[in-house]
Length: 258
Image (cartoon, rainbow, N blue to C red; front, side, top):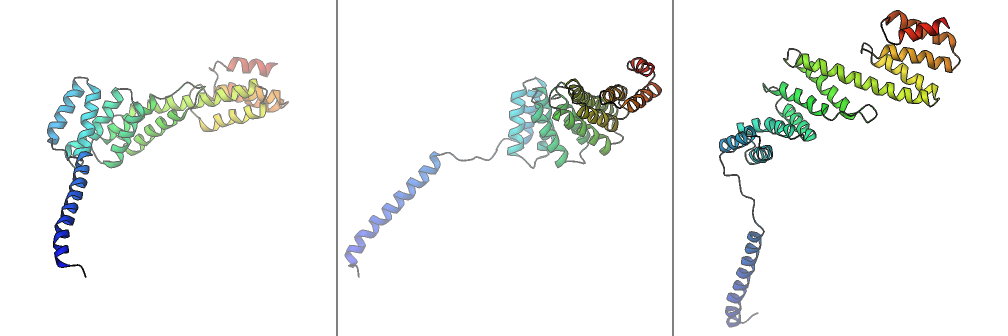
C-alpha cells in the first residue's frame, strides 16, 4: 500500500497534470474554430438577398439566400429562398443548378401556389441545355419530361400554352435527331439500320409537322435500295395521299411514275 505521505504529495501533482491536459484539449478545440448558429434575423437576411437580386448582384443574392436556407431552414423566409435561389442561378446561366433548386422546391412544396412556376422554370432550365441535333439530346428529353409533367399536374395552369408550345418544339427536335441518325445510316449504305430508324420516327413522333412525310419518302428510298419495289411504292403512295403539300410529295410522285 502506498505511503499516505507520498500519496498526499502525488495527488495534487496528478490533478494539476489532468487539469493542464484538459486545458490543452479545450484550447485545441477552440483553436480549430466552432460552428456558430446563425444569429441574423431571417427577415433581415431575406430582405438583403432580395435587394441584391433586384440590384442584379446575383452572386451576392445567391450567397445570402443560401445562408438563409442553411441558417434558418424552418423559417417561412427559407421556403421563399428555396424558390428564389433557383431564379438567381437561372439569371446567372447556371441552368443545372437552377433546375436542381426548382426540382427540390416542387418535391418539398408540391401544394405551394408557386410550385407551378417552379415546374415551368425547371423545363426552361433544361431547355437552355438543348444541343444541336448532331449532339446528345439528354437535356431535350429532360425539358420535355418537365413540360409534360407540368401539363399533367396543372391542367389549368396559365403556363400551359407555352408548355405545349415547348413540348411540340422538343418533340420535333428529338424526331429530327432520329432522322439525322437514319440519314447517316442511309448515306453509309446501312439500309436495314436506316429503315428501322425511319419506321421508329413514324411510330414515335406521329403528328409532329415535317416528320412523317420525310420518313415516308426515305422509307421508299430505302426499300428501293433493298430491292423491295412494291413496299417502296406503298410508302410513296401514302406520302402523296396524306401529305400532298409536302416538299417531298413531288419527288414521291416522280418516283411513282418512274
